[in-house]
Image (cartoon, rainbow, N blue to C red; front, top):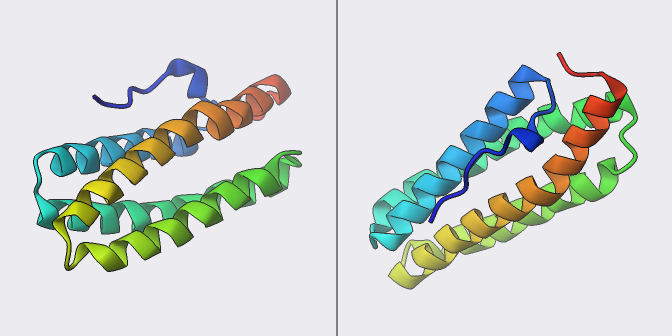
Length: 133
């Protein structure tokens, strides 16, 4: 099972679209490591995913503010909640192999949902405005 890039997610802003493809790739890698029961890879990839999100979210949230995106605060809230939840789960992974599976599943589910709901709405808004780059 993997998340596939869907062209309806294209915002037309290449940097953002490239970041989204990167997030999907990382989420798929974390999920695969979790299914394989590889705790070390799950933790390493989850930390990479978290760092990637930190950087991407700053750029995306600035972009949403700059274009006056009306759903910006709910989108940002989803970012903030995911990072807080992920931090909690990462704390448990060091001592519990099952926690690594939970974390892999969490990252996978969050990414799939965030892309299908929040990013698709943003893409539709950007494309309708013609703000793509």
